[in-house]
Length: 201
Image (cartoon, rainbow, N blue to C red; front, side, top):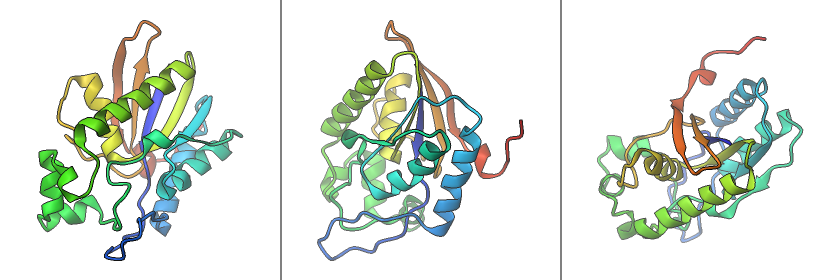
């Protein structure tokens, strides 16, 4: 089967400090990114579209599902490691300011800031990917999730143990081919052409 892993589009920034779990919607730019993704994939056969239950992922996945007249399936185990956080600060901002939360992400110690234990996060994500592959043998599936989920899933294919090893762009697309024999191959990494180009038939 072909598994197309998509990081969600750009979400709204939430400062936090309220103690209420952050679940941001997309920005206007993020909605345009999601529409471009849907238009790009409209020319491919897609058999199923699944999404993390977080709002930014659902809003990214909905245009893709609509373009293929498919019902969107919410898949709980595709949530990010910081699902319980009361803030959403873009990774690029954390990196630019050398925020301690950025360092924790790089070092794989994000549980020190209330994130999920990295080993448990990895087990959960990989089990979710295995389930998707088993359920959709011979199909092409779009799974809209989060940067950390994409890192773990692709890291397992490439033999990279670090939970976070690259920065997927918003609505970036990475393709994995998974055979019935259990062989998995990375086909593309971090595709972003759809954000600039338009596909013509």
